[in-house]
Length: 355
Length: 256
Image 1 (cartoon, rainbow over the protein chains, first blue to last red):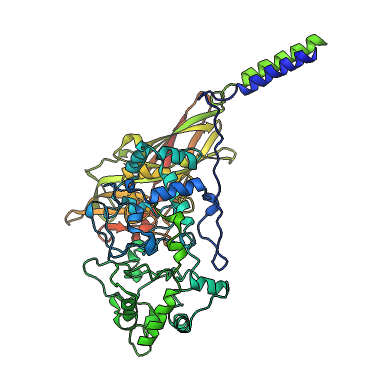
Image 2: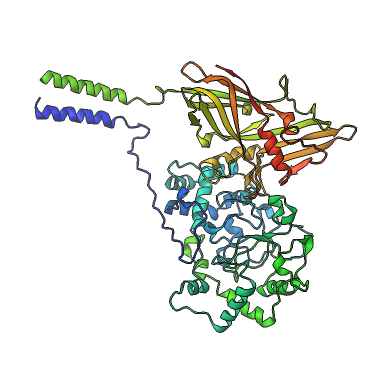
C-alpha cells in the first residue's frame, strides 16, 4: 500500500472517530471552564468549618452568588433581596430596624445578623436553626415574614430572566437553574466574605507596627477579663448559646435556642454574637432592642434579669447580683477597644457590593 | 500482503462505525420497583380519615395525613455486593394520600439477584449540605416537608385525631426531623427480602414493603397520645417516634 493510500485510510478512520461526537449542535462545543478563586485563610484565623473542597469558589460562581444575594426575585414581591436586610455598610445588617422587614411589609421578630466570616461558623442564625451555610438561605427565602417564597417559584422566575440562564451556565457545568446551584452560588459568595483587616486583627498578627492607643489597651484589658470568655478568639465569639439576661419582650416571647433543640434548658439562649464590626451592626441583640453600644454595656452592668432561670452562670456574682460590674470609665475604654474591631476594608470591599 | 492490510483496515473501520452506538441501550442494567404500603395489619390497608385502629393505650386513631422521606436507597445482592442508587435521585416523599408517591421505580439497576434493601428514613445529616440533595428542596416544599423556621426537613409528618377510651377526641401532630446539630433523628432501615429480586433483561422485580402503622405507637417504646400528642422538636419523644417508625417496615413479598 502506498503512503498516499495509508494517509487516506488514516484520515477516513480519523473521521470515523470524530464522527462519534454528539450532534446536538452545529457549533463545536466550548469546553466548560471556570476560573478558581483563591481562598486565603488569614494567619490569625482558625480553620474553616465550611467544606470548601465540595464547593470551591470560582469567579463565575461568586459573581452569580453576588447577583443572587442582591436579587429581589428571591422574594414573593420581587423587592426583598438578601441584601435588603444585610446592608454592606453596616457589616451586612439592617441598620435602623429593631427587627427586619420582609415581603409585602411583613415584620419579622428578629434583627438581621451580620454576614461575615461565615465560612468559620459552626451553625447559623441566632438560635442555630441552620446547621450548614448551604442550607441557611432556605430560612429567609421561605419564611413568611422574610422573602415569603418557595424554591419552585424562584427557579421559575430565574429561568425566565434574560441573564440568569447564562450566568448559571457559566458557573456550573450542568448549567441548571436548580436549588442546589442557587445555594452553591450563595455559599461561594458568602465564603469569600472574610473580615480580617481590623486594627485589632493587625495587632494580633503583629502587622506593620500597628498598636493600640492607651485607652484602647485599657479597654482590651477589660475585654480580656470580662468579655473574652464568651466573645473569644479571633472570631470574637465562642459560638455557644447563652442567656445574657435580657428581659423577655412579651411582643415576641422569643424562646431562642429552645425552638431548635426543644430543651427547656435552652430557653432564652441565643448565640454569642461576634464583636467583629460591632460599631456598625446596631441595633443590638437578637431583637435589636439596644440602639447604642452604651445601651448594651448598661444592660451588662445593670440590666440583667434571670427569667426562666437560664441566665449564664458567669453573670451571677458571688453576692447574688446579676451582670458584669463596669464603671463609666470601663465602658468608655471598652467602646474605644470595640472600635478597633471595625474592618472598613470589608465594609467598602467592592467585590461584595451590589453595584 | 496488500489485501490483508486493506482487509484489516476495513474491519477496523467497521468496528469503529459500530462503536459509535450509544451505550445506553446495550446495557446490563434493568429496573426494580418498590412499593411502600401503609397498613393497619397484614390483612388491612390503612384508610385515612376513619377510625383506623386502637393502640395498646386504648386510644382510637384517626389519621388524616401520613408522609415520610425515604432516602439513600441501597440494593444488596446475594453475594453481599451493594448497589448504591444515585443519591440525587433517591430522595422521595412517600405520601399516603398520593398513590403514585408510594411506588418508587429504580432504573439503571445492574443485573443481579438482590436479597436485601436498605434505605434511610429522613435525611442524612452528613449528606445534606451538598451532594445534589438540594434538588430535593422543591419536592419537599410541595409536600410541606420543609420546616420554614429552620433549615431542615420534616422526616415524618403524621397527623390526625385520637380518642382515649371514654375520653374526647383531640388532634395529634407528629413532625419529626433532626434538631439543628443537636439531635439527629435520621434512621437507616435494612430489610431482608422474603425472596430474591431478580433484575435482568426480562424481569423488573416488584418489592412490596409493608409499613405497620400501629407500631409507631406500639414499637420499641410504647407511646400514648394522651401524654404526647404534639411532637414537634421534642427532645424526648421525637427520638422515640423516629426509632419506632424505623421499625415498622417489613418486606412482605417479591414478584419477579
